Length: 171
Image (cartoon, rainbow, N blue to C red; front, side, top):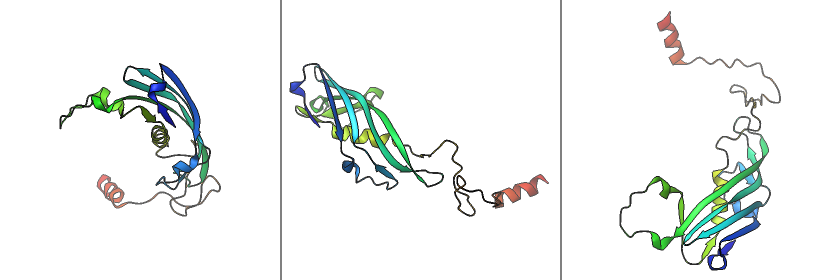
């Protein structure tokens, strides 16, 4: 969705959805966006500074990092960014960034495309190690059975060379 800044006096609310097909090029194949990404963003304009805030929600199918089963995850993120015109950037070859500068994005002209910000917010909020449930038992490291479905009789206490040396040192 493209927003024209000249049409915004102070506050504008952008509601809509972004099709899940826009996320088809995600490199991680263990993630699939199932529903359109819904958003309701409040855009505020103060002179040249623009703030965009609001919820971004979708449903995704993702692979559990413990048991490797697919499960559904309701993603609820909150977009909160500040934009300033690119003309405000100094033309010096080296600029020292302060902590406040890390949260500012830049725009050119009179239009802002919201889609890249929504796309980025969804990808940044995907869990690094997603788990289907907090008490997921995962896979047996010996036989590979899913411990959530069936128990196995494998001896999971593994002997390592370092452990054996430590035992001989302590005895």
